[in-house]
Image 1 (tube, helix red, strand yellow):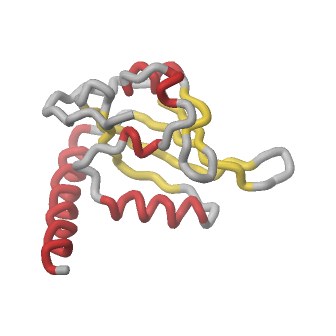
Image 2: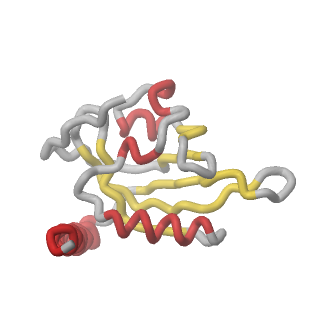
Length: 143
């Protein structure tokens, strides 16, 4: 499935909790109704796909490196994420990602719960992420 072309259209996440679960490789195994609604995808378009399907190109890669480092050590990770919808629009969330364990105590995946961000903090994050992206671009040009 090809990623959509991003637009400048923002869809506000007004409330509730969007929940997803993934396997250890980040492939989606569960989505709740609110996540389906906000993403613009149908359930069967999401299950089995890599969660990175929703990664907006404005997101610095170092945010996801940090997330993977934390959750693979069994630690939770929380951060602001700009997600890409199926229609190319975007939405912002605060996401908490935690390890998921099976009935034998074996690490079997991850659970992510998303809530709406506060507007003042979101403006700070947008500025910080724009700076981080420009730094990533500079490093690529200098290598």
